[in-house]
Length: 429
Image 1: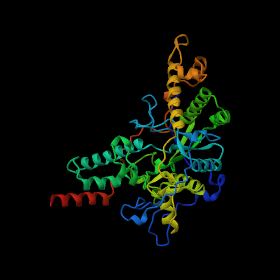
Image 2: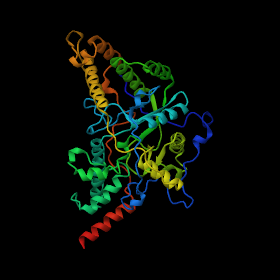
Image 3: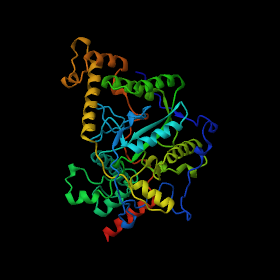
Image 4: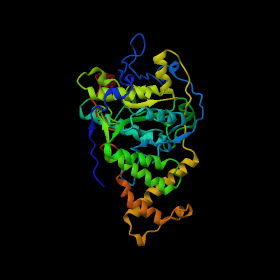
């Protein structure tokens, strides 16, 4: 397969091709007193002040597979190891090949897609996360901040007191929330699990989503539209897999990710939603962030101040943002949720089909046999061989950017450094 060219697209098409309001500036402050930057979620868990905590009245909306949208919304699956070949440098625990969100979130993403011009597509980097995935992601970010502090001589060693650990944890949680509750692998007490369910991790609720916009190259848009149409209503497992991998190849090789100012999952101050609203020299990131923000907000999502790609609906983080913005305290409709047994079984099957497509790609026609489970489902060796010849090696389906590692890349905030120094002084005294 060809090597993808991850070029950055300047702002195109002209503003006239959109509704003008979609390029309105992102408000720097939302309340009359100018206290809160856009998308603030200050103390959303109510750990400093219990009065800030949002009550949850779960609607029990189901999780749905985003890629089953019509037309499908492309998901990059960055955190999933695809036979040791992932867009992420380190595979995270308990990830799945599909992306899931609550049903109303999926409907709103479809609304965003429909507002984009024909050659533009919404992409989803991440939706629902298991608690195990959340812990792995949090640990990577936390450890990288510790490394940065030690390497810059702001920490004498990696042996952390509980007080220092808490300060660093709060900084890490700007980018990756601490899982709540902690996953079963950490052996949490039943009491701590029940308490933690009152402040669930945003992504674990199915109400948080990480998104961006891409432009499809002119020569590939017709083929992409053909694949999207073919996927509509297709139920055959192998045919869907083949179509999805062909669609992924188009995104990988013919999609331009605009200049949003940072990559997805860049942990640092440049990722803040309104960072470029203060910077007149960086027009492209400013305009692309404005477009994404206005599209998502118009569909009912709430933004998040620290990450231009992260938006919330229905969970506590969304309601805390809305409360700070409007002054009206509401209730969240999404708490913790897990995949259903059927969805887990589908993901196991998804993995098997992926592995079999790789085996079919590597095998000679005369020595390839499929697994009995697939045979029982009516899948034939001929189907898989034909599919593998068409799509090539599915392991080459990667993200729309370079591999990344969730390490902290930004300049450590001065206030954060001071808080570390103050605590070290207290411990030394």
